[in-house]
Image (cartoon, rainbow, N blue to C red; front, side, top):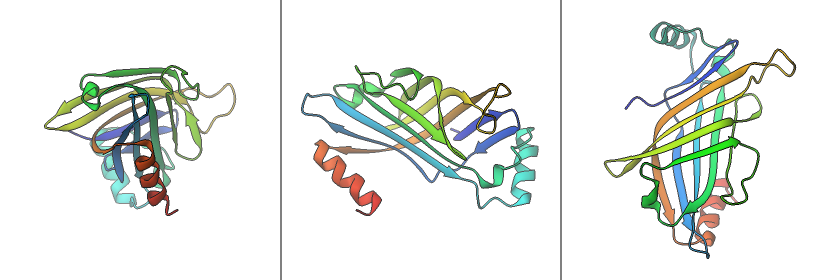
Length: 182
């Protein structure tokens, strides 16, 4: 599978084909439901001018003028499942990323130069060879336009997720603290 993240803005394409992290962590709450946390991050600061030119030719697209200094983090929190195996062929739809769905506690967002809300999220999971493939499509407002000139940006992400499971919420938070160096 070709892993990639594409965000089409009105100033050009923001594109990643290598990820620093692509993981799904989960734990079981006291009520028996599974909480999943998806985290995908990428950084393009080490791209040279030659890398950018080569990418533009290969993709037949103009990259965003600031594509050499992009970073991104995508996050999804969701609590609806009873077993992690239920994720196979599961689809999550979130209309507005910052609106917390009280039934499922869902939220999604990304940041390049600043955090942006993702709308019309469709997040699909496919299990293949004991790994989950994530297909996430959404739209957002263009990060560089804060007025009527802003157009929607399309986002498409396809990647394999590393899966890390925990038996309890306490185990999960201990892991998160270690990740943060706390």
